[in-house]
Image 1: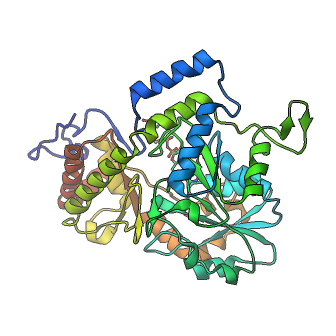
Image 2 (image 1 turned 135 degrees about the horizontal axis):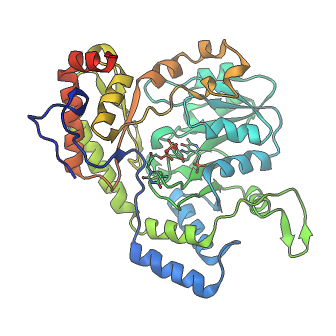
Image 3 (image 1 turned 45 degrees about the horizontal axis):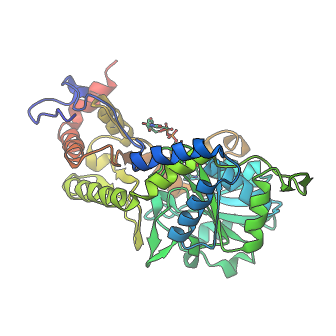
Length: 399
Ligand code: T4K
């Protein structure tokens, strides 16, 4: 698939595309195909397709064990996991969330009847930090939702809960399944965490998600609510919804857990190659996970326009021309998207790090669909884009 030739020009300057097929951020990893097919045959033989089936239970057990949580409640997607969790906690008022996250984080709070209030991030970690959260708190605050962005674990110790006046801290851990901090899994942080197993996540169930918690009562309540509130065949005891994960999705998840270590190792080899190769390119910095051992599913760079010679957006355009579909996650920040942007023009003033980081972040392709040779080509393209920055700038600005 790699066809890049050092002598050939970048596609944006009229050369042939480096990659015949697009290299995507979020190209799905696949699990053990034979195991998946066998499990799907079993599902059909059993005629037990959904509703807390045996594969869903097995998947929940394995996810709980990897995450070091007492309970895993599997659901249909990560957005529903967060919505169901916040709603089940019976919260009223507002939820403090970062703006630098996927739009599902504030959307889930709003669907649960809370007002999303945005707090800023720390420029190095891209995570919420104490003083931004403290200044976002009001007497209306019902919960703080931390996001383990890029799979880096936002340690509850870095947000001093005692200062949060008994306000619960929960986590959107959509990026962080399998990550560990000082050897401990993500279940060890906060009241509960929510996961995503969307196709683009490093372990997928096509669509899927889960809530992790150590709280027995909360777990029991979540199980009832994900199934309409049914407590027996003829008995509905509370308001519930349909948030169930089906058996084929669970089969996919189990077939992926079987090869999870291999995927993590591949991701880290890819990351290492990016790190080594991009270290020599002025104006490109790789996000540093600090003490977290991440699952490696995101390769996050920041582009310093002055040093690099092109803005982040210009570099993204240049890479797309070569079929490298780099992404501007999470641009422009949730506070600049509807319905949130209509809620006040002064919000951006308190989100200055978010504003800066959102203009610089460029996420690069990774995962098992990509080889180390592909990574080398992507890095060469970036290095050459730096070398040819003035010409690329002119080509992109030409009418
Ligand atoms: N919280 C956070 C912090 C999250 O990041 C997310 C989801 C959630 C909560 C909510 O979880 P879910 O409700 O989604 O379970 C993607 C994903 O749709 C989304 O799950 C994810 N975060 C977010 C970061 O990325 P897009 O719109 O940027 O990606 P999408 O769907 O365009 O896929 C990216 C590329 O991957 C495509 O251009 C092509 C390729 N692709 C995609 C799919 C689905 C494939 O090659 N095959 C595929 O099957 O949102």
